[in-house]
Image (tube, rainbow, N blue to C red; front, side, top):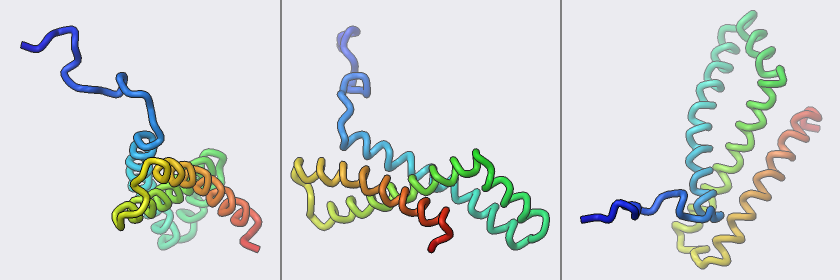
Length: 129
């Protein structure tokens, strides 16, 4: 018989968060977010195809403060998911399994992800010039 005061299996309250678990959870969250954000992308493309008032409405939505926050989050999720996916591809090739490299590459994904997202938005707001 199992003892009632002991948990049956480990759970999140038992473990201290580590970069590996945090990045794994974030990779799943960004993947789901990108799937849902893709619906918004399709809506925007459909508004272009319809033209006129539909496109004007979509443009107003994306230009609003909430729309810009959504687009920034979508960009950040896309960049993070891409960089972490490349990290996983490197793991699949056998590179980076030792613990120091796992931690270095994890922190690099965070830092480079924020930098690339910032550069995309900086140059995007300047008109690409």
